[in-house]
Image 1 (cartoon, rainbow, N blue to C red):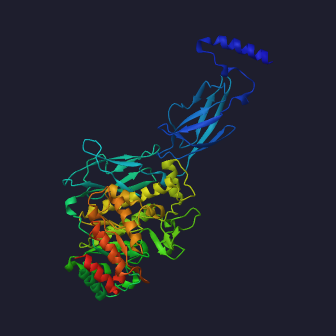
Image 2: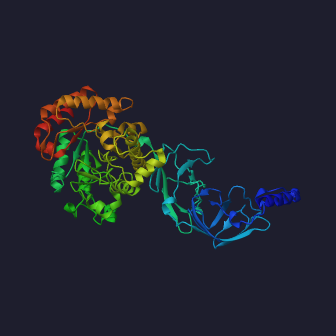
Image 3: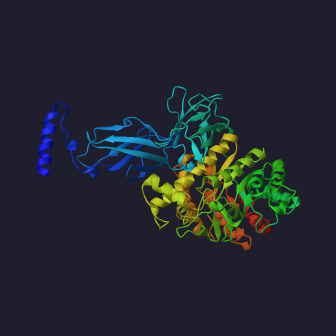
Length: 574
């Protein structure tokens, strides 16, 4: 029988030489040999898509990943067993097919064998997270690349020009993932636009998905900010009644004036509470101010008391990305926004020294902190600036294991986040992301008021990197710090000297370090003094010997209660 079939096939082949001989067209009595082996699906732009399919007799059911393009047009390719090449397929597969309704597919395998399939192709449900802007570039009017770099937190973009004349306009180039083609963008990013004030762009990705993005390019006139020696003190309401009355605030200012303090870093935010009337906190938490100060505004009172004496007041965001102290539930913020909690490798809320942390890489958390900092700058015209400390920009280095963070690390580096949180690559990647946030804050503040001080008070480097992901020499390299106050909290002179020298070495590549550097000195905490006036005298004498004329003390309450500290500080602030 097989020999007979081969002979018949050869005769048939020679009879059709004019149209070419196709082995697949050999007649056979086994119709089951003619089948579809697999199916490939592509977007209208010919991007390959993942597809899950089932062929059962004359029925094809397939589920394809959402390509981000409106409609159900797809390119389809059938793969057949080796040796099978159909004579024709209808409809024409050389162009996209509309699968709005099931499609009837006719495949003519041979002159005598034809099969008909009902092809139903469905698209996966929309996943809004898949729709995003991959990159935003700022272009000049001639479409050349500008020197403006945008910083980003979620859907908010901020850029900063330096000493630019008013009225400069830019274009934007928006780049999307390869499978995403928006239906529309309004206003047109290709149009020259004045971005000095925030512009809201609406991107319609699909009939069901639209997202808004804010873009601002502020101008920082560097002549508006002049660095001066900072002789500062931190004023906290922890272990202190300094905010209890206006009289206590007045006393604080008078002591600072008497001993030569020119900058008060006043606690503005801690324990998920503000020390001023905050619309941001009211919006997020329903409470506009720490209940202890209901009906008052300690920040405003401090600014008002300090102004006549020429003493600057800086808003110190003490807790930064820390949520709460001593509460393993994560506190009020995490209770209301559970996804805001930072996670360690075991999935627990990130904890270090009894502080429980928010996810510093979460755009929602970043927006919350940014809004607070922008709010005080806009609300208080006489405020001198803002400050973050060893919790801003920071995260305990055992954190950052939220699924969104590790997925981002995998996407950007091709690596899996290691269980060892001190792994050097993993450590530096997270630190760089926090440096990005510091840059984002700097640009926002300077775009509002160039004269505002942006101050950071990290731990000593490189301990700061290993423990809190703070690479503050990088902040200096990026130029996103006006004054830096490393917390050189040492209990004896020799240890202080070693930390001071190390900090000066970290500062050595940078100009104006004598003005930028105001080392943090610990005199005491709520429970009592940490050093003696004699040790403080040694430290200040060494600072002056090394050319540093200012320092910042932690904290006011111990200076207030120890006249010896006041006398030493006054001696060196003449």
